[in-house]
Image (cartoon, rainbow, N blue to C red; front, side, top):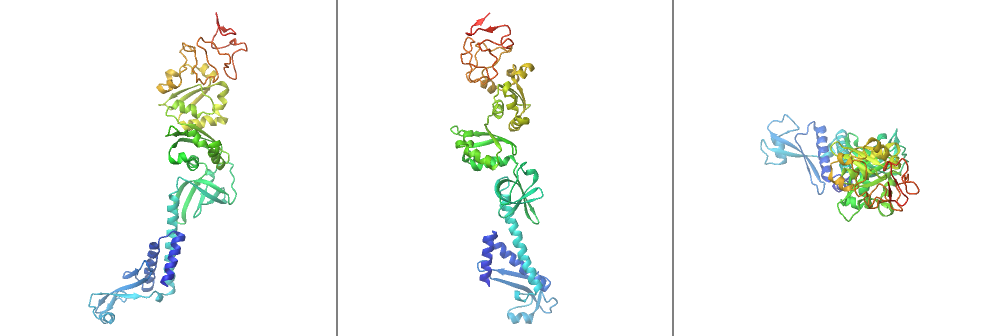
Length: 437
């Protein structure tokens, strides 16, 4: 009997992950409950269990008295001496209770106590297991739709993917395996309630941690993330190792790493940019893939004015303003984007040196405009100027032969300024580039 009980407890411990000590405690409580149902009280009941063999004994402790008034808690001296002749008045006699003497109701109640304890411990184990996975990503199997919500099996428990946490337009099929972000784990009377999400920005971050070794090891940090689930995500990354390219590490060989995440998110676009402590550079990176001419950032007000080439304005703003909106969330700045023409008309393009006080910004943008709107004294663009990537001014202000202004080039084919050119109101360059009075 005891060997069978030991075997049963061992199996329960392995399958339900419930400790043997907890199960033995449940048996002890069940015996006390059975005694209470059988005798009417259990204050004087003592249970002894050997944890190694699972051998148990149940005793009823009675006080030796001259005249018995309570059959449950007292015993007469003659009856006590029939058990052991050395008992005296006031001694405690332990009388073993045989569990087989219990009635059907007492036995059933004892069984229910054990089963209830097992269920409680099982819920507690599951709650602890999934509570440790809160704010993390887990793989689940789609079971069924419950209204507009989706029930997902996580192995030992079911999770609920509510309509608000689903990506718009995403449809699941039963038995389909998906990755979800564990939002919250609650304890309820029916067991743990697990809420998961497919729209949370942290889902993308956790996917990068699982896919990119450098992120998992802390070499590459994800500094910021902004997401419009199902459409587009921007993440800013930074490397703690100068020899590791943070963007390249996240993209992977031939885009293998980022493509694996895109496939999991069912085609959601992911822009990976380099983080920078300088807000101006960060904003410029965040507006990628659009090219930026200048950024006027106010760190205190958390606002920024950005100037982009005319032909890049729609790209910088994005479809329905998405690119600018995600960039603003990523950087924490309110961004005002204007084209070069709009900025000149508003007068914002020429005075960024006065509006932005950060020295790093001035070092980054070496090709500045002077107050009257003309080029600086040497008339040169810096070699890395983003205004027109392939064009340079020569020392004497001449345009190199292969220099083009941009796709909407304002230079005439023969090298002269167009009549309405803003750079020289009444002057024109000759074809060979020499100034003409």
